[in-house]
Amino acid sequence: MEDLKPIPLSALQHYAFCPRQCALIHNHQAWADNWHTAKGNILHERVDSAEPEKRKGIRFERAVYVNAPKLRLVGKLDLLEVELATGKFTPVEYKKGKAKSDNWDRIQLCAQAMSLEEMLAKEITHGAMWYWQTRRREVVELTSSLRSETLAVITSVAELFDTTSLPKAIYGKHCQACSLIDICNPKLSQNDTSQKYVEQLFRECDEKTSE
Image 1 (cartoon, rainbow, N blue to C red):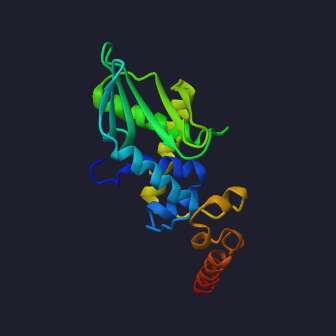
Image 2: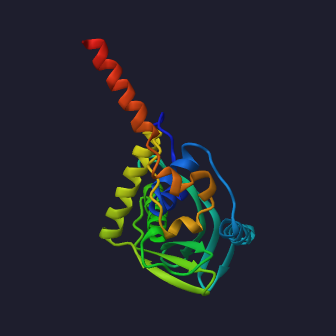
C-alpha cells in the first residue's frame, strides 16, 4: 500500500463525472480553468479562509485534512461539524451549483465520511451538501447502497491510477461543462483509430515473421 499512489478525494468526483477527465487530471497532470472551475475555486477559498468557530453547541472545523491508508484516500474536507454534547461528526461539502439527480457529489461526500471513520474509528451516519447557487443544504444519509457505490468508484479509480490508462473519449452534453474539453477534444478522440491501426501493423509484422 505504501508504494501505491494515494487517491485524492477530488478524483472520485472527477471519475464519476468522466473517467477520461479523471485520468487526464491525475495520471497526465492536465488541467485548465474555465468559468465553472474559477467560480468553484473562489467559493472554496472563502470556505477555507473562514476561522473555526463554536455555535449552538457545534464546533465548525474548516479545511480539515484526512488520510485513510486502508481506503487509499487523502484530501481535504470543506467543513467538519462536531456536535459537542454527543461527539457526532458531520462532514459538509460545498458546491457552487445546485443539487443533482446523480450521485457524483454524494460519492465524494461519502468517501470523506468513510475516511473519517477509518481515522477516528467512529461511525458517521450522515453528511451534508451546501449548494451555493440555491443557498440550500441537503442532508445526505450514508446508506449501505451509497457506501457500496463509493467503494466501487474507489476501486475503479485505483485501477485507473495503477495502470495509468487513458479511457476512450465518449462525447456527451457534460463535455461542454468540462474545462479540459480542448485538451481532451472528445469529438475527435472518440473516433481516433490510430491505436488500432498501430496494433494491426504489429500483428501483421508478427505473422510475416512467423511464416
